[in-house]
Length: 302
Image: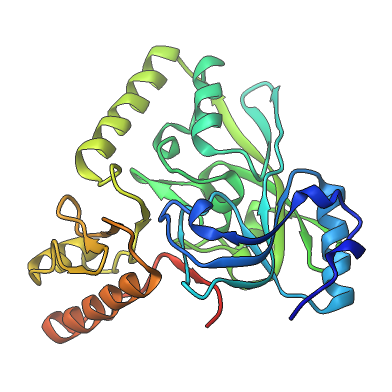
């Protein structure tokens, strides 16, 4: 499917052809995106959506690429990396509202909140994703989820129509939201936070950072937790009890530091990862009669 991208009315230098997706995912894995565009202007996004509709081109949306596995065969059509930036802080009586662009990283926002003595983001500060990605999957850590601080979310559908959702309308669940089920692209959100004390915020963030360094294999590329937790079991514990810690196929490995993570140990392919995933699923079902569900999203030609 070849498309004349010269008809797309955005600066042509913004369009990359046959872009290696391993450059845009925390897993450092993935084939080529046929057309790749970093979106930093809402007008460009609307233009691309109109173009895609007119030419029946499939669209794939990315944030920081931190919770995905791109297949070795790559991605057909247009891949959009949402890089919309905005941070606007408004202090109200009891709370602080922060309007944040979907492309802003959680870590950067948490750092700004620390400087401004705003609390509420400490638990999520180590998640290596964007605000948009965090909202889509209702990212969480240390007992807190993004849904706990979201007030509203502004988004756009694939027809280019803007819409705003309240927290109650977002259908937040465990690693889920309305954006997992319906085709909307997150533009920005308003978060509800409050004033705190710098020393306490800093101490919390440092404690969570230390925990992450000690417990998670952040020295290797990965997509975070591979599987969702179970209702009555800890997935990583089952994987460890099944003797799968360190299990390796090709360049991919079940982390010896935290068995809930599959890591890219050395030039792993998506096929290596998927083969490990299948082996884990079959082993856990056979041994413990539990069906594991992926937390990471698989993207690309199926």
